[in-house]
Amino acid sequence: MEVLGFFEISVVLFVVLHILRIYFADCDAILHFYERFAKPPERRLRGKVIWITGASSGIGEHLAYKLTELGCKLVLSARRKDELDRVKNQCLSLAQKLFPLTFEEDFLVLPLDITNFSTHEDSVAKALHRFGKVILRQLIFLVNNAGILQMGLSMDCDFDVVFPVLNTNVLGTISITKAVLPHMVQNRNGQIVVISSASGKSAPVPYVAAYAASKHALQGYFNALRMEVYDKNVGVTMICPGLTYSNLFRNAYRENLETRRDLVLPPTTMKPERCAHLIVIAMANCLDEVWIAKPSRLLELYLAQYLPLVRDWWIQRDNRNRNANLTAASRTN
Ligand SMILES: *[C@@H]1O[C@H](CO)[C@@H](O)[C@H](O)[C@H]1NC(C)=O
Ligand SMILES: *[C@@H]1O[C@H](CO)[C@@H](O)[C@H](O)[C@H]1NC(C)=O
Image (cartoon, rainbow, N blue to C red):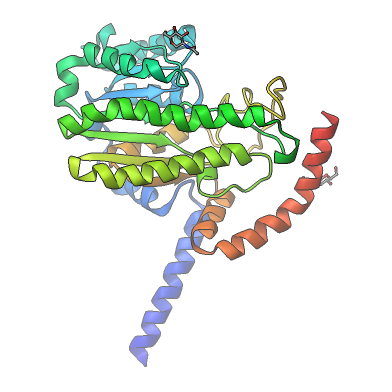
């Protein structure tokens, strides 16, 4: 009897502590553990070649700075070359302060249209050419960060705005990954990082159906890919951040291709610097999937994963008002 009592108390205590932890954390329990106790990420990442798409702003830009501070060599891709040059110069001056042996060649600006699939093989060749032998020796990371957002109630949205979201977020990401993958498999060394979204696990609000669909598609594709390449020493890391400050919201499509409306983000929105810091820990430890979000969203992700019925009841109750308000807002704006 006494043993059973002890066991039950332990289980209850564990669950309570786990729930309490959520209120003081901004990431899932495993990432939290690695942040506290794993070796510093520079041990694993220094000197590595890392390719970031969507590197001209937001999470991609801040990830570039973070990785520069750890001594990584970077390939920076996005559509706008001038913005990439700005990020590169910032990286270069950061690196020169920290590492005396920094060369301009350590940072490659490689403009890339993620939806122009036929150019992707060529872009991979350019990246390999620059880092050539180095890339063969060292672990290479591809960080799939490029993506766009669309916001609007599904019923009010033109079909035209659903297409670019899926085209960019899903097909673009798959295309560039497929172009890089043969080199990783051949070297038996590589880590594919995908900036998915908390919406790839559970979409909490109306307004983001197409975006959530694209991120769910990424979860499906890359979770399957992980199983295909794990024995070739290639890993897949899915990053699921909640609301984070970035241009994603400024550039978001609305109900049609012409409308873009800025969004006032709540004060609980995560800073991209913090998000980038946690992503780096996930990368250095090759974690399979991490959640990065403020407590209420984190709790919702845990419910979605383990108690979906409770989660649905909670969100639907919450959304009843919000839905009405959003409909009213989209009519007036
Ligand atoms: C794709 O890239 C090629 C080569 O740079 C270019 O000629 C073509 O116009 C691009 N296509 C689109 C749709 O942007
Ligand atoms: C909806 O709008 C009403 C009045 O404009 C406001 O009182 C209420 O808090 C809003 N509800 C939500 C969930 O934003």
